[in-house]
Image 1 (cartoon, one colour):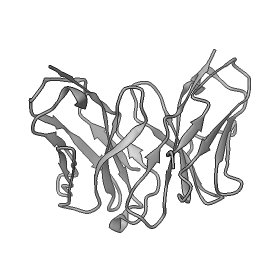
Image 2 (tube, chains in turn red, green):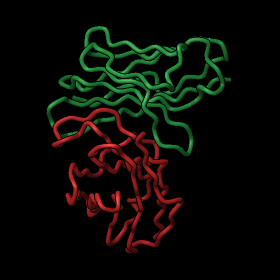
Image 3 (cartoon, chains in turn cyan, brown):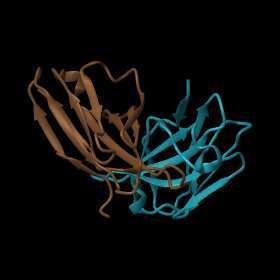
Length: 117
Length: 114
């Protein structure tokens, strides 16, 4: 079956530091890949997505590139802010061929990010 | 549109009682999903609907769990004879088949079984 593995957390950084959160996946087909963010007390929000190999998703300074050869979708940001403190989830959906529709999502376990001033 | 709404936000119940949660999706979204999230874990898929048809159910969804979406709009998730292991956050999400916009999640219903 499908699975998503994220790097162990929590991750603690100082403001303006570089962020990488690793994500690797196992899937039988050609999934679409996502990063979701959950701020304290709020629901999950889509941060970015990529629907095919070599696509780069980006939003709010965050980026992730769909690497089929390494089955990875690592999240990066060049300079984090205190407001980026949240839980980050990597996820995949196998119904997302062409990016036109989505079936069930399979999530990683989440990575807690804390950014200090 | 105010997004995906879930009610109640919190529910505390005694073991053995039945509980029902409601989800109101974004009005033009024809797909609706239920997930369960326990502390320190990512959400786990339970079931999803396309319009009023329930298209897939996870093995996690035991026979004590039932979900409906009677008119293809709101959905309910019922848990019968609750157990302490049912304590979790129950998340609802919706999406529109045919667009690339992905899901919109609600804020969830936190269930505590005592």
